Image: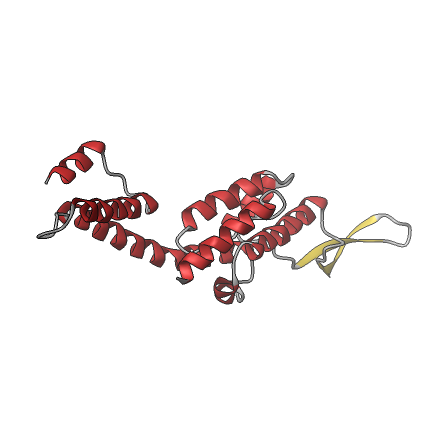
Length: 197
């Protein structure tokens, strides 16, 4: 029931503002969500930098050496150490920092509270992206188990003793709908053979 409610909520959110906001991650839809997030990022003017932030850690502000001017305003050989801030770094680095902030915001907007509690401690978009992927890998293993069970059930499907034809077809179509919903591919030949058994 929880999954059905979550999927309904997910679909409503997707229809409401799919152009203005990133897609929500619904249970069992990680692969589609990842693809949609990347497509959403492709609509941004700084898409390359945002994609870079998902795969790489951000630029670290630190100490840098700055040339010191003498009393006449000429550069000297002396330097002083200055802490880097957003205001005193090159525009290229500022763009990277802005893309990092936007990547974090896109991820946080596209997840629910259950997943947020997992990624909340992550310091950057790259770590968040990896944490969600690790979290959802366990889910994909469960999906593989489900697919295996569905194919096994399909292969063993037969009529019950004394079962009406209507009941048989009803059970068969429920199973076929479950296979379709979970994107399990069954050929027409397999379906025809199974119905005749």
